[in-house]
Amino acid sequence: MINENQENLWYKDAIFYEVPVRSFYDSNGDGIGDFPGIMQKLEYIKSLGVDCIWLMPFYDSPLRDDGYDIRDYYSILPEYGTIRDFDNFITEAHRLGLRVIADLVLNHVSDQNKWFQEARTDRTNRKRDWFVWSDTPDKYEGVRIIFIDTERSNWTLDPQTGQYYWHRFFSHQPDLNYDNPEVREEMKNVIRFWLNRGLDGFRCDAVPYLFEREGTSCENLPETHEYFREIRRMIDAEFPNKILLAEANQWPDDAKKYFGNEDEFQMNFNFPLMPRIFISLVKEDSFPIENIISKTIPVPDKCSWGLFLRNHDELTLEMVTDEERDIMYQEYAKVPKMRLNLGIRRRLAPLVDNDRYVLEFLHALIMSLPGSPIMYYGDEINMGDNIYLGDRNGVRTPMQWSYDRNAGFSRVDPEQLFAPVIINSNYHYEVNNVESMSRLPTSFLNWLRKLIITRKKSAAIFGRGTIEFIHADQKEILAFLRYYEGETILCVYNLARKPSYVTMDLRKYSGWHVREMLSLSRFPDIGDLPYFFTLQRNSFFWMSLEKPDPQ
Ligand code: NOJ
Ligand code: CA
Image (cartoon, rainbow, N blue to C red; front, side, top):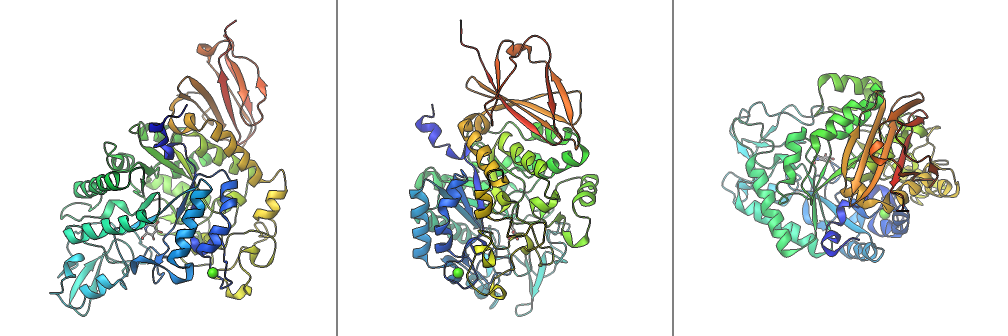
């Protein structure tokens, strides 16, 4: 039974679904997705079994970083609709039992934002100190550059005032100065504004970079943690039960710190895990996954990792060793165009050559490890990508609804779409679309729905339970037990591209029944002899272990 206190921990059992408004559905025929469009597709999102939508930035923006460059924090980009459309969307989502979180970009703004426009008018302007200025580009030397393919420095000269401004991302995204109390207050007001309109929380962008200090990496500074604790206190006091999800792409020890003492973020993307899932697959070896999970648990009781395979960015390889990065590039980015910065700008299905076994395997994995799965729109229909579009746009193309014109995304002339639909023959929208795949009982989409229904029946175990690895002789076998309040699930995965087998000592469950969870088929009861499984290549079993009724 889930009691009221546990209900407040809804995010621990939830499945999230990331959506760019631009790419989802165009309701008014201008070739660009919009809020009334997503609103029409809420039933579909609900039909996936998803619990919470994560909206990418929809605020007014010149769109030089797809909305992560915000011009006005208090308004909506007109092409996405009006504030009323936003309100209607939230109301309708809530009516259907869906929650909605949205991106909150704290670290930087667009250079077209009026705060920066004012700040750069002259050195004495009252907004000057809202940004980080220096007479020379030497300050904070050695701080890494994140967008290495486009930026040479974290400083850019402002010709009008003759000083350099600091930016961790594109040079058109000046960083805000969090040492300035007005900035800290203003961003709290932004938070209040959108929570008052019904959002259920935020995915906080670029969390580690808020403060700068000489002689440090300018990442994960204590001041940054302190500010998030301040935000959390404010939200808990004024808007109970809203959540914060951190984008902190860091090594495990630094990433984990964003949970704080249950007083910073409730959720945090498991960046350390994501690339190591792919590395485990290449190496046919469970060690990278097992090792990184061991390094990222336990988390505080009320916190949860966000488990993801792909998102709207390149598959980041910043926080892996050089050797691991080489393995990833060799296997998954054979063509230079597939790379961007330190990462791979491809969608999930093309990454794994559209291999149905591997796609099922990967989804089962993120649905069964400790945390809350976060899916990326289109991955449920194995959408392809377009590496000939610039930056990360190749993984943000129109959602494929049907085999009609423009994949059913919009009724405009195809030339007018904000980005072309995917027509590569192996991923053509005429096949990979919601309507066709919904109709086909054996489609990946329907399989995934079933997986999600199965997970939901045991959401508490998967989301809240402990994990205990079982060591198999075969390196390609990943096996673990998940427990929660007396219930036990055994998960077994074969990472190899060939069939394999495993024997396990399960004597402590002697006499227990074993049931495969997707089909509900009974397997032989556990006895005193080692329990034996054979597994097809890249396949898995979720088995519920059921204690026999007392005679
Ligand atoms: C992280 C976002 O995920 C990414 O898309 C964006 O470009 C950077 N932050 C900079 O805003
Ligand atoms: Ca539109």
